[in-house]
Every structure is written in structure tokens, then in C-alpha cells.
Length: 302
Image (tube, rainbow, N blue to C red; front, side, top):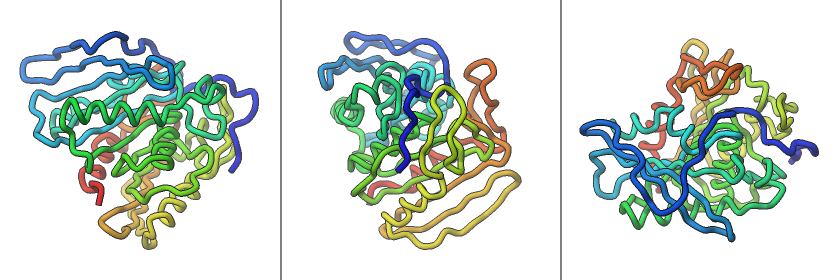
């Protein structure tokens, strides 16, 4: 496994945006409109650090509802992720809760030295997210068989770290990411990976990326093949629609592993918002949020 290069003290510049979640006791932060859901802000102490997360609950949430954990990218925040990727609107339509945790120093310790302060200081982000999921389960009564994790860039890398080091999630949906660090004995789970083939920050071929942190991880195709091997999956079928290619492998016990690539798309969340000046524009060829949710909904823990 190649490691993130020395000198990449700053996490790669993906989402240089404002506003982290507030701290303190749980508090209602937004009631959006009549009939819509609300976001509350919460803090917990993990590994001696006070950590925060935002929790979106639709106005109508069924008993034993699914939970999606959305991890922001480097230099991003929980508030920004909630605003940028359309998960609240999808939750309103489909009836699930969404958690938006805040990375320590706006980054995540995704393994292999990545990224930023969490990587250097060995922040236990696996424990933080696990504690958050357990707390939300107690608060909302979410379905432990339908807990999912997604994220962009450094957040997508953290999604892979959680998939490698826990058995909490039924499926993972990394976007514009790769796996950093070792993944020695992961539990089989479903994976859907979305990647732009013109991504220069986290390159599809595994070559060193551009930006503040020259991400030097394994090629994405190799990472996805590793999850197929872990899950004892079959050979993938391939389908194409315009610039979008889907490689889909079926696995035992109803699991699946998919790789979705978008020609011409850079380092972005397809179908999301432009998050900062000079960032790669989101591709209009794919609504990544809707596609990832459909995959999640079809793949509970077996």
C-alpha cells in the first residue's frame, strides 16, 4: 500500500467551505418549512475530544428507519455537507435519517497517514462515528440492519476505513475517494463507488494527485476488486449510458459491489452543488445521491 506523501500536512483541497456544526447539548437548529424535517446539533466526547454532529430527521420517519452517515470532504464541514449534496431532500422522499459528523480539524483519520491533523495525531474517528451511530440508534430507534455510510474525497476514504475496521454498516458509498492504509480482515458488505475519470485530486489510476495533499493511494479499480474478492462476488457485468459506466457484481447473501465512473467528471459530487470558487463543477450526468440511496435501500445487512 502506498502512503500519503510526507509534507501533505493539509488535507487535499476539495471543499474549502465555511461553518462547522455548533457545540453544546442537542438543540433544534432548523425547522425548514411546514411538513418538512428538522436538523439538531449534538456533541459527544470520544478519545478525550468533544466531537459534534448534525442529525436530520424527516417530518415523517417510520419505526426502525434506515440511517445514512454522510462524511464531508477535506476542509468541509457537517453543515456544508448537509447543504451541498441533497441528502435531506432524499431523506424526505424516502423516509430515513441522515447524520453529518464533523471531522476533527475538518478532516478524517482515514489511515495510511491521511489526512491532516487527524492523521498526524491519530484521532480515533472510527470510535467517534461508531459512538455517534449507537447514540442515534438509541435516540431514534433506527434499524441496525440498515445503517449506511457515504462520503466524498477524504470523507469517502473515511467511509472505506469504517468498512475495513467495523461491522456497523450494511453498505458503503465512497465518492471521489480511494482506500488509504491497510484493510486486513474486513467483514463482507455491499459497496458502491462513484468516481469521475477526470479527477485530478484523487486519480482513478492511483497516480499522485494534485492539490495540497498529493494523494497516493491504490488505483480505484484495484480497491473495488478487493471488495469483490472479500465478498466472494462474481465477475462484474458492464453497462453504459452516455458518459456513465456501471460495473456491477453480485455477491452471496444479497450483497453487491458496484463501480460507477463518469467520463469528463472531476473531483466533485455528481448532481451536487458547486461548493467553492474554482472547484470542479459537479457532473450533471448522474444524481449520485439518488443512485447511492437506491443501492443502499436494496442492500440491508444480510
